[in-house]
Length: 434
Image 1 (cartoon, rainbow, N blue to C red):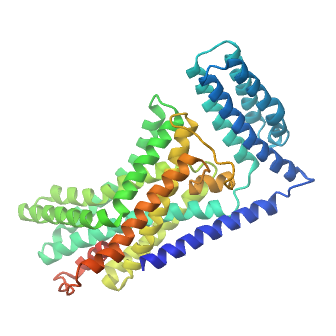
Image 2 (cartoon, helix red, strand yellow):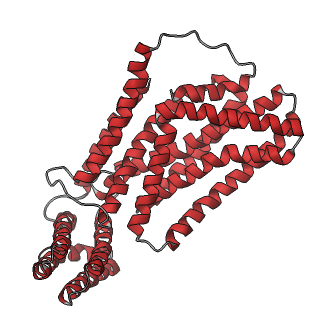
Image 3 (spheres, one colour):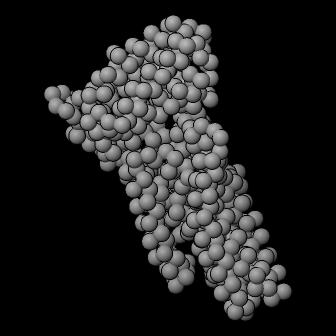
């Protein structure tokens, strides 16, 4: 099942790339029109980026005069061609970029410190990306990818919370303590509100920290990648789900034994808020690299909530007749793909902030900027290698779990059916990640 799902996901992503590239070519003919001039401008922006990189490298090596000449040539010989179409769609951005180019040349002439020049170059890199977004259509692929990422995050995290809550309520029914359901539901509601507050709190903290935007976005994305890896990697997720379920079950029995309403509210809050915190973190990372695509992130969020509501109703009404294993198998694979995309964006943000090296691979095809940021695809040595390493870990883990281990461990008889029917959804949750 997982292998078929993985192949299908790769095929879908390839189709999205082709669709987006085709839509881009259809929207921007290569010659003879204002759209053609936008295409030319985008090509010039690639040259400008290289010139900016060379300028920074020369400054670091102590070649101020050569750096000044490179910065001047990058502006006069290339960015001026970008200004013509850019001024029509974003006059203020054009002015800001012109000013930043001039400031960098002035700093070089004044023998300013390398750190000060580097900080201005980092800002200029961000302006160049904004310029390309202004000159590029979103296409079809990028909105589809971002919508799917947003949908799968809220759906998978929400579904896991629903399944855990169904088990907790099942335990109460088995213990003939259904009068304690309401406190658990209250705790769930409080966790949902706390998740929303966490999202905005994280945004406020990130904005207030005295670090560059690119660095903070990269750190947020790397944290999201780590959590995505933890919750979706087969070798970890199964054991983690078992431990978490045992912890919640022990808390429920203790609270029922004491007759503590507050303790049961806390159990409901804890079960949901752990998923909620992860969701808030994932959406922070998604929004950080979703410039110009926020409406599709929101659409995926609301669509996921709507579908989750229907599935939650079906779980409580139909129990194990809902195909949870299929849902969760697809979600796990898509979360892994999303983590690879976030890793690429995080590495690229660190490169833009000059925290790590940047070695572009000119021979690699370059996607439109919106598709690049949705897939985390930036053709540089650092981004591609990091993504390939993470992909290799996932593939090797899958081979071990689904090929090697079944050959080494003899098949065992299926466990007996659980006493409480509502335990089945979480059994399915654990098995789907195995």
